[in-house]
Image (cartoon, rainbow, N blue to C red; front, side, top):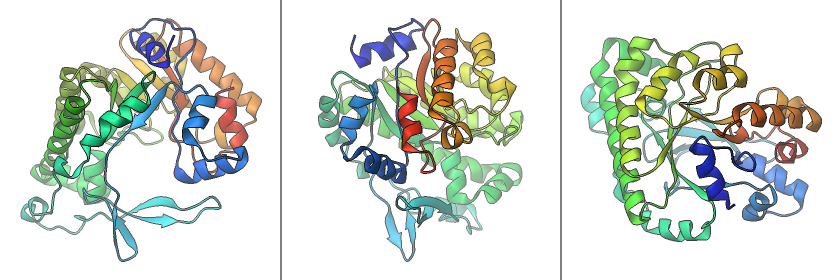
Length: 338
């Protein structure tokens, strides 16, 4: 069984020989892990850990404005030093001080022409036997970062046309991005990532009414397009989002990530019992306490639990409940895949 076959079997709610594995980590985490391993070959690492998915993307690098970096879409951030290298920290976005809808509309918005989709066939060819995950589409959280969370929430309540204008921009960009990616690769991409963090540690960030008005329409467009392209939807939302899961399923998500263990409703037993026949799961291994502070034995026990519970009858991809962070000891990362 190839890695790609293993992933497709799990996503069809059939149980493969083992739960498929995914891996993603912050750059400083990779530096720390490579120092521990004595090499810096990422593909060798993924093969040694029997990782079944490969992530491909074509987003251009940010540009520097003084001491601040800015993405093509207007997110701004600085780099904070860690013992293992610089780490991104978001700051006020490019449109945080905009005082009119015209200012939002007149921003130098990118088009997908800035993306090098022609490089994708070669990336696909490198990973013939692996399931491919493409992109980093975000139709709600990224607009909020560009606008600033506080002002974006105010916009949603008092100036909803402003919030919709931003979400529309990002949605149109990623609809075309994903369409071009599928076309140039001949449909080889298996999974398309869509991101919008909807939850805090204890509850959703917005009301059901706001979700249905300001988020759901754009998610539906993205999910529908991905299905038209022959792909599966990997929807990422951190936090306590249990109240939104039925809506996320109805909108068409195939896989939910990162299933952050924020309370009883996000525990694997609850999720599998309620949604196991309707949704696949990705992630779950606690990034806030277990991975940075636990022992390898404790981590392996949690991995076994998630694979047995969520992987019963298929429907689970093993992964941390967010990118591996720099405070996770290398031994604990390796324990996830032991």
